[in-house]
Length: 301
Ligand code: MN
Ligand code: MN
Image 1 (cartoon, helix red, strand yellow):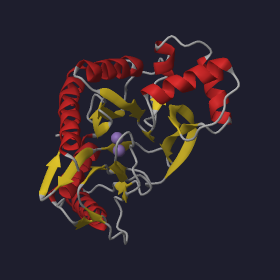
Image 2 (cartoon, protein in one colour):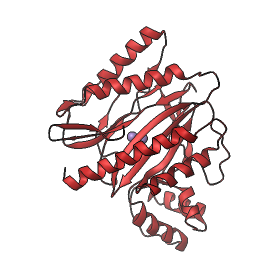
Image 3 (cartoon, protein in one colour):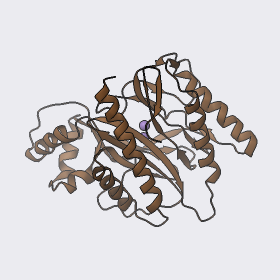
Image 4 (cartoon, protein in one colour):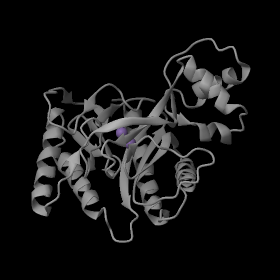
């Protein structure tokens, strides 16, 4: 990794730490998700970053990929996963926390277990380590937590960490939270480790399409509004995910129509919301790591 790349990853991480501190100070039960998303994205910009993707605010059995629509009235309650991405010159910090918004601390154990498994995985990160050792560390830590606390939490097997690259959230390497045979080595790269836990079965399904989009290919577009929006997307978000909310805020008209045209033409992908199959609550904990030379850094903590 180049020196400027490393320092951009570090700057993004420093912003992430600040934003998480801010989040914990103002996210309370009853606050609208829309308000939370807008405040977080505003804070990221104030601190000199850009949102690397729309803030994911996934409640209860929704595991990931929910961000509020422009008129969203949904209120924060239950267990809330806040997944934040920060880009500095295209280099990304990707981090998530879970917050228990119940009056009686219903999700305290789940969140505690999740923090513990991420910490156990963090402990073993070193240059040249094998990807499969992350999944082993997660499983070992979770098994111990379940035995010690008489809980039956499971890892969500199909959600994984990933390598990061310039303007790219998932840069090709999948870092499973489940034991497998992947003996690829982690060297000279940025990546995220993100175990998701649930009191349910640990499977997810793709729910209805949500508010998050990403550029996946290019083509000629006939409609003038769609063409103008596509140009804006390419210049501003590049290959980083974005949402309808941001385009409405930019003052574009006919956003819904333009997005549907671009999705139909295969230029944009519209991400479905990911839901736990048994409709059980889900937690998430995530940090971004840098390995360069013989150094390991957690940029987002
Ligand atoms: Mn994330
Ligand atoms: Mn991630």
